[in-house]
Amino acid sequence: MKQVVSVSNMRKSDRHTIENKASSLELMYKAGEGIFKSVDWHGKILVVCGYGNNAGDGYVVAELLQKAGCYVKILLLEERFSEDGKHYFDACVNEKVPYSVYKGEDFKEYDIILDCILGTGFKGDVTGITKEVIEKINSSGAYVVSADINSGLNGDSGLGSTCVKSDLTVSVGTLKSGHLLGQAKDKIGKLINVEIGIDLVEKPYGLLEKADAAKLLKKRENYSNKGTYGYVALIGGCTEYSGAVKLANLSACALRSGCGVCKILAPKSVCHGIMPYLLESTLYPLSECDGAIKFDEKEIQGALNNVKCVAIGMGLGQRGDNEKVIKYILENYKIPVIIDADGLNTLSKMDADIIKHTSCRVVLTPHLKELERLIGVPLEEIQRAPVTYAKGYAQKTGAIVLLKGPTTIITDGEEVILTNTGCAGMASAGSGDVLSGILCALCAGQDDLLTYVSLGAYINGYAGEIAQQKLCDISMLASDTALSIGIAIKELQG
Image 1 (cartoon, rainbow, N blue to C red):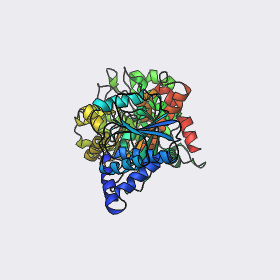
Image 2: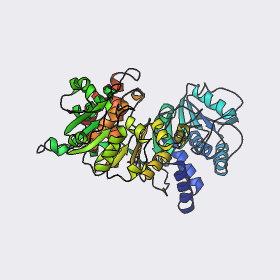
Image 3: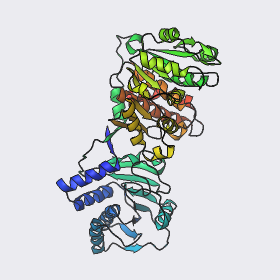
Image 4: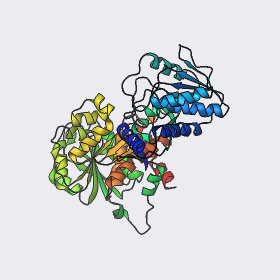
């Protein structure tokens, strides 16, 4: 997996490398040289520089462009420099690179703009001249390259009230989480990383990529049967939300995410609506009260016989005996249990210690609002540090937490894995139900649960991308993602 780090880890690693391996000037030169080699430079080039070391990378690029015979100019927001930045700015002056201080002009005459205004350590909102310059870069019509990270984008959360929208961002050293989370997909066109020899001092996050996913999707043996791959159960549905469990079933069974047999457990009154959609699956009607599940120990026990994984919560609603059902499963089984949607809403009203002390291997799949309910921290605060809060709740409960978003965060409290597949068209009802079905199928009988939960998130996003390519971001539905799972798996298997 590709390495991804927090800003804090990057800062500590930078300092460690400078103290033990290479000078800060050497690292700055390598950063600038790496950016220089990553771009097809042409036409008129403007290097826009702020005040810190990010500007220093830009001065190195400007010097190299000048030596290569390119048309390049430096634009300073202000004549203020970091110590290392001043060294390379002086080198540009010696090379007669033209420069000026910003006086309100626009940048429409330039073909390429290199953004070196703010680095990964920036926090807060962009204001004043910096905001004005960023807005002019975005409206220039030029090909925009951001050095290390888009100016204004938070290096940890990927959020920014005003930030550069790049065609290409060249990360330096190691990818930062802000390159992937939050608004990053909307602000970064193409993302590449250049290594400059920084030794990491803390464990990085992992980014699951296509090659990693492909290795996990092993071909089936001919000498096998449905029992080889396991029985799974999906528990959900109520009068108002019968569609959710249908989507989960479509993902888990009909499109063969990996299980052998899928059982659907739903209230009796909604089963007639589910039956027409079932071909391979088995339906278990459950006792009910007002269209929601009523707890019956013998029914649950019979339905979950020989099951290797359970997913609960899809369309479950807020009525009925949800709490009793979840409590019974957590107290009486030793299998992976995926809790989603109304299962999470139910869990938020229960004592979290029940997860900590269960023999089940619990996977929680919240979006931001559901995590807010679980941990009692405002959504806005979680958005600023999503990895920290997901990791913290996983540590507290012993569960695997899969925090849904443009980039998905999966953590067991120690290790963090990110998956960056997915698309805007998946921002619609039912996408989480599709994910739950995939996860339930993949996790049956698996020992390395964290890895297979991450694989499920990757496949879900990849299938969504395929669906969006066939249709468009506005028109696609969650069922389109479900119908693309088989294609996604086939492509990954190669």
